[in-house]
Amino acid sequence: MTPPPARKKALIIGIKEVRNKAGFGPIHFAHRDARNMEAFLIAAFGYKKEDVVLMLDVAGHKKELLPTKAKMLKQIKLLVKDAAENDQFFFYYSGHGTQVTCCHNSEDDGLDEVLLAANGKGIMDNLLNEHLVKPLLNVKNTKLFALFDCCHSASMLDLQRYSQHSTCSSALRHMMSGVTNGIVNI
Image (cartoon, rainbow, N blue to C red; front, side, top):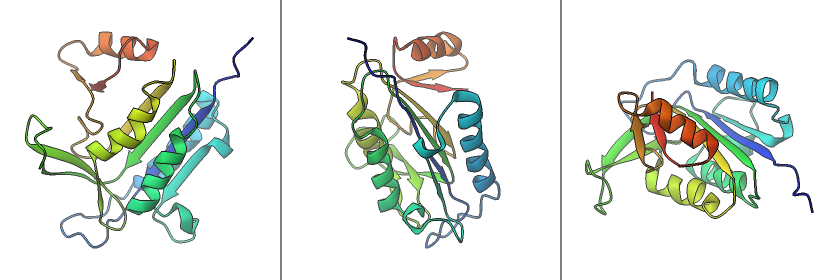
């Protein structure tokens, strides 16, 4: 029996302004970059528009897709829900990233990485791993490509890291072929 064709699903988040949080100015190209990423996935990689969710903090955008912490977590869960063999998932975030003190001794540097939602609330790396990575670990040949256009993104998903100064090209080839999982810093 032939397996069903692989699905391609994407969640793209662009946050220009973080409210209720001092010290974080606007990111002027977050919306443009998010829209360009959506168009790129559709044109270059064959994603269907209905399988790409775009969350923006802009007037006139769908209210349910305003990137608050709760709505971002909901969309992350929906992205990987019912993952099946050979499915491909793409996650993109353009906005502010920051770090907070780690309270559970799980970080080598003592800091958790955090994505900031439009309402100023943060989503810690542990939570991203739990809702974006772990649901896919036992699904055969499933791939997740995550691109973080923000500060402190290197260990955002709490995965093994490869540096451009060591085995970056080799690590990237292994990840693309499904041999290993991790993050490549370029």
